[in-house]
Structure formats: C-alpha cells, structure tokens
Image 1 (cartoon, rainbow, N blue to C red):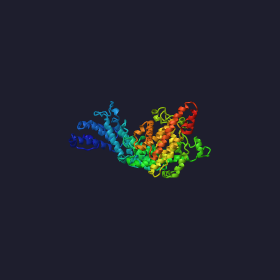
Image 2 (image 1 turned 120 degrees about the vertical axis):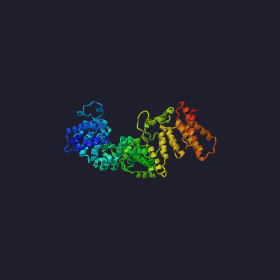
Image 3 (image 1 turned 90 degrees about the vertical axis):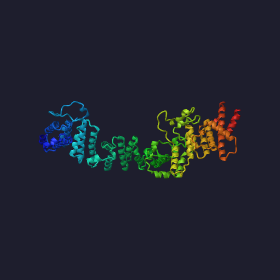
Image 4 (image 1 turned 60 degrees about the vertical axis):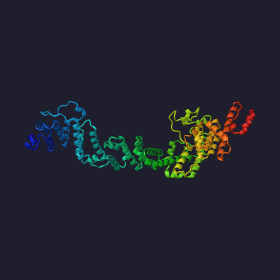
Amino acid sequence: VVEVLEKHGLQKPISYVKNSQSRKEEAHQLMVKLCRHTGRKNPPVSETVWRGLLQDLLDMQQNVYSCLKSETCHQVFVESLLCSSRVENVRLAGQLMHCSKVSQDVPVSLSFRGKGYAVKLAYESSVELVLAAAREYFNSSTSLTDPCMELARACLQLITDCPPAIQEELDLISALSQLVDFSVCILPLQVRLRSNRLSLIEECIAQCSTAYKQSATLLNLASLLRVSGDNNTGRKGQVLTLLAEQALKCLDFKASYIHCQDLMTAGYSPAWEVCSLLGQSEGYRDLEVRQELLAFALTHCPPDNIHALLAASSDLQTQVLYQAVNYQMEPAKTETGREVTKADYLKQAGTAGDLLHRTTAKTMEVLTTTGLTTKAVLTAVSDHRWWKESLSYLHPLQGHGIGATNQEGVFENSNLERQGCSPFYQELIEDPYVDPSQDVYSSYKETPQENFAEVLLRTGKLAEAKTEGKTLFPATEVLLQLASDAFPRDMMLALSYLLALPQVLDANKCFEKQCHSALSLQLAAYYYSLQIYSRLMPCFKDKNHTLYQADPKELIRLVTQHVSSYSAWPEELQKLISQLYVYNERLTDFTQAQVLQGLGRGMDVQRFSSDSEYKKNTILGLT
C-alpha cells in the first residue's frame, strides 16, 4: 500500500498504514486524498492512469483496508472523476455508473477487467453524486458563460432518464439564459439561494417596459425557476397578475384585459385587485368589459373591500344606463347622412309613442365613442331637466304593446283574452299566453333586450341609491309604461309594476288604456282589493303573507262583501272602494254582454261594459 501511495505521489510511512487499516474514517479519507491528488496533477493524467488508480484502490481495499466495502471505493473514485473539472473525466465517470433506473436491472458488461474488477455504481448513488458535483460547479460559476456551467450541464446529462431533481437543475441553468435576455445580472448562486423566485420575474418586468407582451416567455421562465413549487395554477396566476398590472400602468387596457380574462377564467382569486383597478379605469372605454371585471372583483375580494367595489360597480352601471338612455334620445344618422328626428324614430318603430330598442352590443358600441367620466355622468343624472327630457319619450301612453320586443307576438294577445305569463310559470296556468320573444327555455336564445322604460327605471333607482335618497326619481310614468308593456305578455309582472306606484289611483291610467276583457277587468278589481286589504290589515312588509296566496276571485269577493257592510270609510279608502265597485260592475256588465252577444244581434261587448247609455239602449232594443 505504501508503494502504491508513493507511485501516485503520496508519501506515507508503513506505521501510518498499519495503524489506520482498521479505522474506517481514516481509510476513507486516504482513498479520497489519493483520488483528488491524482485529479489535481498538471498536466492532467490519462484515462489509463485513472483506470490503474481504480485497480490500485480495489487492491488496497482487498489486501489492507478490508474495513471498507468495494462499493465505497467505486463511489470515491467516480466522485473524484466528476469533480476533476475535466469533461473527459466526467464522461469516464458515466461509464462507471448506472445512468437510468432501467439499466440497473439489466446485466451489463464489466467496466474494467482485472483481478479486482468493478461493477457499475448503483443508480441512486449515481444520481446523488451527479447532483452534488453539478451543484458545486453551478454555485462556483460567475456567469452563464463560465466553463464550470458547462461542466455542471455535462454532469447532469449523464443521467439519461432525467428524474425531477436532475430536471430541476437543468431548468435552473436554462433560466439563467432567459434572465440574461431580460438584462437581469445576478450570480448563479444568488438565483439558487433566492427564496422568493417570483421576485426574479418582477425584476425582469422592471427591466423591460414591454414585458407584458411576452407572457409565454415569462411563464416559461417562472416554470424553470419553480415559482410556487409544483403549483402550476398559482404560478400562472402570480405571473399574469404582474403582467396585467404592468400593462395597466402602460395604459394598454386591451393587453391588461387579455391577462385578466385568463385570470378570471382560471378563477384565480388574488387577481381581484388588478381586475378592480382595470374595471375602475376611466380611460378604458369598454364599459361592458369593465362591468365584468368589477363583478369578478366583487366575487373574490375580502369583505372589507365589498362596500367600495359595490359603489364603483353602481357608478359604472349608472354610466352605462345613462348613456343608453341618451343614445335612444339623441338623433342618429341614417345611411344617407340625414339626421333621423324623434318623429322619424317613432314612425320606424310602428306605433306612436313606441320605445326605441337597441341591442346591448349596439349600445355598447356607441358608448365607447363617448368620453364622459363617471363623475360627469353622476352629475348629469342628478339633473331634473335630464329626467324631464327622458320622460318625454314615454308620452303619449297609448295602447298595449308599447315597447314590446316582439310586436307581432304581443298583438296575438292584444284582446287580453288569455293570461300572459313568463315561460317559467306556463305549466301553472290554464291556457296561458307566452310571448315567443321571452321564451328562453324551449331553445337557446339571447336574453331578451331591455326596453327604454326598463333602462330608465334602473338608471333612476341607481341614482337614488347613490345619492342616498336626495335625488328622487319620478317613477310613476315609467312604471305605468312598463305595466302597459307587460299586460299582454305577463299580467303578474304588470300587477307588480302597478303595486310599486307611489299613488295607488294612478293605476287607473293604465287600466283605462287596456282592452276590456274578463281578465283585465278582474286584474283591476284584484289590484284594488289588494290595496284595500293591505290598508285595513297592513301586511306588505311580510313577503310570505297568505294574502298573496289567496285565490284572486275569492279575495275580490271577500273584500267587496266587507266594504259593502259599512259606509263610513275614511276618504282615502273610499276612493279605492269606489274604483273596486266600478271594475266589479264593469266585469258584471262584460259577462252579461257576452251572454247577450250569443243572441247574434251584432252587439259591441267592450262598449256595452264601458258605456252606460249604450248598455241601456241595447237591452231595450234586444227586449
């Protein structure tokens, strides 16, 4: 053993060898020292010398240092080859290792032949040695172009099946080149030691003003750096949030929205903040998109932020509705360039006083050309002159079907012979009328568009809420318009609009315009019965009160019977009772007229129920 040591340039006395032959630690250190000493020789030794050294190590282990295993000698030798800073030695080490998990289970030829031949190093040990050597080279590199970086890559490429730990090291080397592309100058060791790898992405974005346009590159870099570990969703969310913020700072709203859209699709909750900022950006003209962004922010924000975001969302909705109302009131241009006047609009719509319909898409297209800020809109909405001008578009209140989305469909039920209802409730009503334009269940259709009165009502109520009641919206005419529109399509909806009227008797304006039928007259009687009952026994605060579940005919009968038994009612209630009597009488007359009409004498049923002189003459004539 002393002669072997001397041959390789290490001088040790025989006594040292004798004393250390049973000491495992000292024997191991001696083997390591011998291999490293050989690796440091200049000029470098040849492959033949290395092979001879391995054989010498095995001889030493077999003859003297039997306290060590032969596998330990292989491991020390391979480790020294990997750490020798020479590519050819690294390749030689690869010949002495199992470089994939599969090859370990397959019989292989012997690496070196001799009396102490060596089998290949086990796969797990090989991976550990390769990782240790590669990390040492990586950590000692000063830059990506450092020769040690190539040595690190050469070590890692020895393991052919590339397990996760090896792939992570290779990705770290690849990440360095991308950091250089973004002008981020940093030592490789600093990259490895950076606990918050996302901060490296932030540095890249800070260095490049158009980084938000390179989302694919930065997402790949984040993946190479293992930002957020193995959480791909979290990684993508964090990077896209940073890019959306940068695009917003650069006022590139469209690019920012593209990133926000990806975040919203993925349901990445922490993105609520950037979505909120973009949604509140006055410079961004796409109001529909801004509403979508604020809706996402409201869904995912912490409770403390809900109030402020609700206010912002309300402001934006007011802005959209305000512009929608103005768009329908302001003159538009025809294809020939001539301005279309209000009268022309009404002619195009068909019936005088009909409402102007525009699809949401068209409205939004026009809104993008306006430059009003939210503040300016809210100021305008609180102006009573604007309300007056808007309401003038609801005059005159004529006939049924005004503002309906499908005029032909509504005229099918213009005589109000069948009860109109929402498609959702059609199975609960006998022989109902369902407006085809409202039927979204039988086949896919876009949601029916809002008409002018609905938009105006929503605008007014939002303005009221914003000013906490200081700006009162004159809702009567709009509610009457909406009730009139709803009568043929959905009678319960029409009744709901009428019940919301500030003044109960204003409902007569709507009832008088409707075509007289058993249903319309019954509905009028039902309306006044509800109002009388609620005043005698206040219950409207209770949404589940049995009053609303009672049979309408039975309610009309009970209320009529009750008010007839007493005459000294308060004046306000007396007015309601008078109207109940009027519509009860008309309903009786209408029923009688239908019976008389069966005689085949050409009688006008509607005139019979509303004109007392005509009724008298008809009865005398028939008699």
